[in-house]
Image 1 (tube, rainbow, N blue to C red):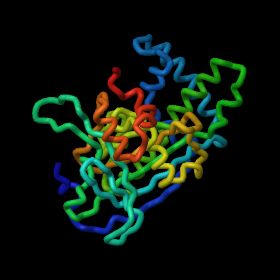
Image 2: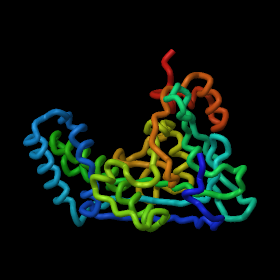
Image 3: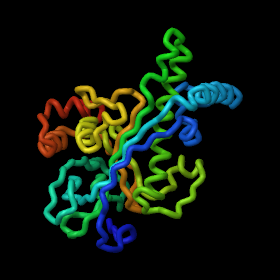
Image 4: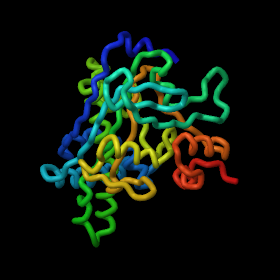
Amino acid sequence: MTHDSLWRSNRKILMIKKVLTYDVGEVAPYINWLYFYHAWGMSGKPAVEKRQLRDEASAMIQSWEGHCRTRAIFSLFAANADMDDLLLYLDDTPQGSYVRIPMLRQQHVVAEGNPNLCLADFVRPLSGGVRDAVGLFCASVDGGVWEAYRGDDYQSMMAQVLSDRLAEATVEKMHEEVRRRLWGYAPDERLSMEQLHREEYQGIRPAVGYPSLPDVSVNFELDRLLGMSRIGIRLTESGMMMPHSSVSGLMFAHPRARYFDLGKIDEEQLCDYARRRGIRVELMRRYLQSSLIKK
């Protein structure tokens, strides 16, 4: 996979670290309501029922405006790919120190002519001698926003589902700012909300725990690099984020980067990945349990 269309020069990659704070009213327009309906089991339901539920949700969001915030962290690192590993540089010296984060590659048979993908494919290889860049992010919604609804199961569930959607919407808005201004690789991008939700932008932002990045222990690496506690996120022993309405992941700018499903992981790949991560196989088995081929 070539990288010429993205980085045409050996320009220096500037490290960026930003903490972003939004009022819920700023991110609400970025909500993808299809996932909201899915969370409520509304697929196939009449439009009038969906409209009524959305009106209730919108009223709740309006009641939060002015005192409920969502927060995010974005950091841009100079980077290279070393085979299937990402190298994130901690300084800009030629022999700079780096953090190595191994990635996983598809192992199942894909369509003829298509490669088995790994996220590291979307970053310039170390052997080329030119640095690329990778973004890291996390986002969260004020953890206590649904506490006011204790004792009312319906309202509490509505608040939780909305918090999840607002966390995702925060990342959608942040990613737009990253592309157009912070990283700035697509400064002239002008997409409608529908186009954003159809992922018509350049680059991708795979989230931890999702199909191309299923290993939740990657959150420990992201926490060390981002300092998630700055926006109130803490990690459990299993790498899950608290508050529940939180999202984390990586950002890639390559124009041919696309989302993909890693597929199931067999025992050989599990052992190899655990070795590369420096984690005991049995512990890694716990982190990847939902992605493993069942014996």
